Length: 94
Image (tube, rainbow, N blue to C red; front, side):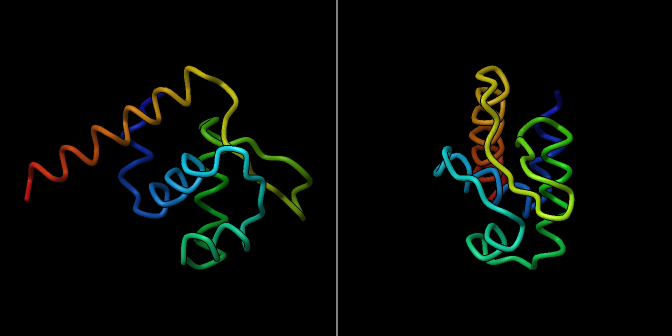
């Protein structure tokens, strides 16, 4: 999985950071949008994309989805490392 691809999007990064800080959280698009201060529609699209990439796990139905952080250790490790590298690279470009 190419983690950098998903980290290019600011909203994806905000969602990933939220779940890294709250790995046991399970919430729907509206709740997560509130936590990350983004629009519900944009957040919903990003959540679906991250779930498709297996960074998040989708629970519930298509009409009432809820999302949680991956339980796959190798994916979580790649995401954490990728985010750290992304932040380091961003700081060095300033």
